[in-house]
Structure formats: C-alpha cells, structure tokens
Amino acid sequence: MEIKKPELLIPAGNLETLKTAVMYGADAIYIGGDLYGLRAKAKNFSMEDMKIGIGFAHEHGKKVYVTANITAHNQDLEGIRRYFKELKAFGENRPDALIISDPGVFSIAMEEVPEIDLHISTQANNTNYETYRFWHKLGATRVVSARELSIKELSDLRANIPEEMEIETFIHGAMCIAYSGRCLLSNYFTGRDANMGACTHSCRWRYHIVEETRPGEYLPIEENERGTYLFNSKDLCMIEYIPELIKAGINSFKIEGRMKTALYVATVARTYRKAIDEYLENPALYEANKPHYMEEIRKGVNRQFTTGFFFGNPTHEDQIYDHNTYEKAYSYLGTISGVRDSYYELEQKNKFCVGDMVEVIKPNGDTIMTKVQRITDEQGNDMDSCPHPQQKIYVDFGTQLNIFDIIRRKE
Image 1 (cartoon, helix red, strand yellow):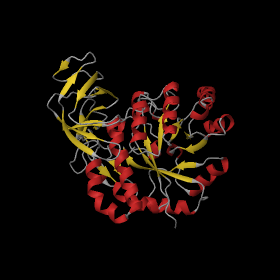
Image 2 (spheres, helix red, strand yellow):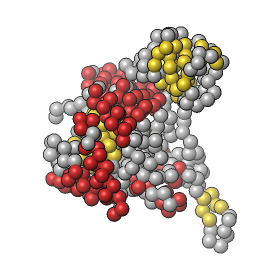
Image 3 (cartoon, helix red, strand yellow):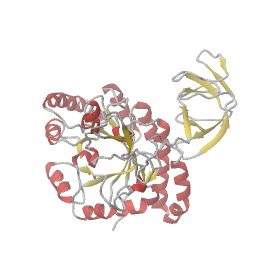
Image 4 (tube, helix red, strand yellow):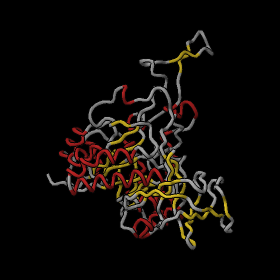
C-alpha cells in the first residue's frame, strides 16, 4: 500500500493561535465563529478575524476549516443560511471546508456554498463504512471518525470506502466521556447544552451518592479506593504510534484543543510535525526520537495520557479518579510580536521578572535557554517584573529572536 503523508490538523480558538498553528507546522487549522460551533466558551473568531486568519493561512499554503457542527433547532436554520452566505462572500479567503454534523445544516450548505468542501463532524457518530459511503454519495469529501474506533476498525473502514473519501481522526487531546461527544450531562445539570456549544465539562466534576431517605448526607463513590472523579478521562496521545495511524489509511491527524493557549498549540504542532516528517523520512530516526517526542508533549498541559480506543476499549487505567486538574510543566509567558531597537515586543500572559531563565521555542523545532536582561513598558520605563496580564511590554532577552518565537518558563 502506498504511504501517503497525512495532514496535521491543529485547533485555533482565536487569531493568535491560528497564526501560531500556521507557523509551527500545521497543514490545516480548524476554527469556529461566534455561532454554530461546539466551543462557545472559546474566544472564537469574529467574521473580520476569520477573514484575516484564513487569508494569513492561505498566504502560507495552509487550509482552514470552519466548524458549524451544532445540533440545529428550527430557529437556527435561517441564521445558518445567512452565515454560510457571509462565508461565501469572503471570496478567495473563504474557508476550505465546513465541519457539519446535522443533515439539515448539510443540506443548507450544499445549497448555499457548493464550492466549499463539506466534512462530517465526529458528532454524527461515524462508526462504519456504510456511514462514510452515505455521506460520500451526498457530497461530503471527508468524515471525522468516532473516537470509539480501533486501529483495526479504521483500517477496515479505509478498505471499504472510495479512495478519494478522506478519513479524519482525533489523535491527541482531551477525551469526552460521552459517545462521539453527544453529551447530556451539562444540559441536565446547568441548562447549558453541550450539543449547542455550551458544555460546562460536567464530566470533570466530583460526584457522590445521596440515599433517598437521607437527604444532605453525601456518600463517597469509590472505585478501587482511587477517588470519585468517575468520568475524568486521561488525555489522548498517539505520538508514539504514528506508523500505525499512517498504515491504517487515516488522511488527517486531528488535534483537540480550540480552548487552549498558543503555547499548547505550538508545542503539540511542532512535535507532531517533527514526528510525522521524521517517520516518513526515516522510520529508524522516528523510533530513536520517541522519548524526545514524549518529553516535549509532556511540557504542554495534560491530564496524563492514554491511547483511547485505538488498541481496545479503555479500562480503569485510562481514568483519573483522585483529581480533575491538569498537569502543567511550563507557563506561557508570551509570543514575540515585534521588534523595537534591541527589545522584543510581546503581550504578557504570565508574570516573569528580570533575571529569570526562560526557554524560547521556535517554529523550526529549536529550543534555546536565555536570561531576561531588561523589561520596559510601552513608554520605555524600566520594570523589575511584568505583573499585569495582557500588558504590552518590551524585553531584552540577551539573544536574537524572531517574530512568532514563544517564551515559556518551567514551573
């Protein structure tokens, strides 16, 4: 079987992270507008930022896919139709594809934007090759597989669908406790519907049992005495299994995380970029560098790692029972956005001080250590530290840097 280079598909929740994804190795980026996507809590894109972002990606030879994967109600349909017309009006900067789960929304897209590819969201429960064939006959160019499929199931699926039909699969990021992400917990507890983009991540909460005749008495739930976070899955990470994913015939490797920072996006994008490219260049080099890939991936925020359903159904070992917090190895300090004399401009994301040792990660995969020599505000006044989030500052790092370099500090 001919080995084809898979697409690396990276999430972006705002214009900053889209540009980061482009510069740090993405082949394509998926984003959401203010409406009709499933990450309403993400900053998301205004129509103007979306146009700018798609233009930036296209200038660098990258694609952008826009999510419109809510479970639509009657009152949503006319707004969705207008939304697609607005996207069409972007002209050359229109999206390369729309990600859709609802058949009604799909029909509207076919009518309004036939020139834009249509991808079927994982929310549509895509678990078999007949489902892929169904969507292909209707005009979809790609289907995102359900996260509950194994490598073998994906291989069988590939063998039973048209060659031009593309398979997109999540290979890294947070796992949802509900089948294909179709969850009712959030709606039940808070009235915020996960299927309409307003998930409160109820699966990460701590649960107890209350016995009917003893109201107010909370009885702990224990599984092997590990704790009570029953639905709190570890994060998916398949960077050690790139060969298996490629051989299964997956066309697009999808990373989860539209609500994550530019540091997360850069860390994951450049590490998977390196792993994919090195495997295709020399499988022995990829095998030798596996420890390095995992070391880098662990520098991003995570809930520990699992391989999900790829090699069989998850067990209790794939859950985290005693806490619901992320592991955070590094703090995101900012991204270089400009140069003034010998000082580098950035917007402060977390506090740091003159004299701190920091790491600089670069789009080409290099990482350097350097010391903060001097910090000034916009007026050129010296500062011992930068305590105010989102403050624009100018920093002498004692070495030559470039725009889009990202500054991080080990915790």
